[in-house]
Length: 67
Image (cartoon, rainbow, N blue to C red; front, side, top):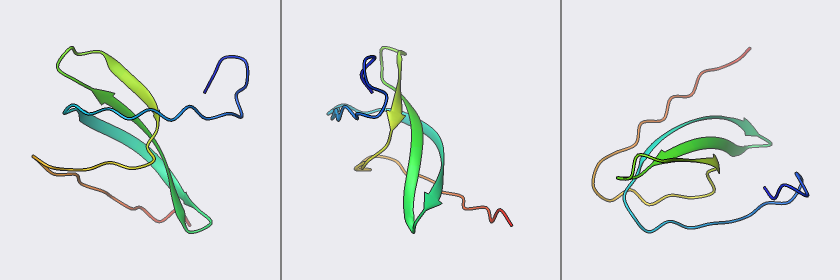
């Protein structure tokens, strides 16, 4: 999000391999995921995960009911 408006979203696409970790929830039937990505430079990038393409490895997703 831009510093001047926390309600706006900046969409950025990265075209290099990264490691990913995240957490989120399902809101109104749709996933809302916050994640941190790290590339070969070891610098973290964080934000909303809107989509991802898995090519080389795998992604595990765990859903825990919160009753």
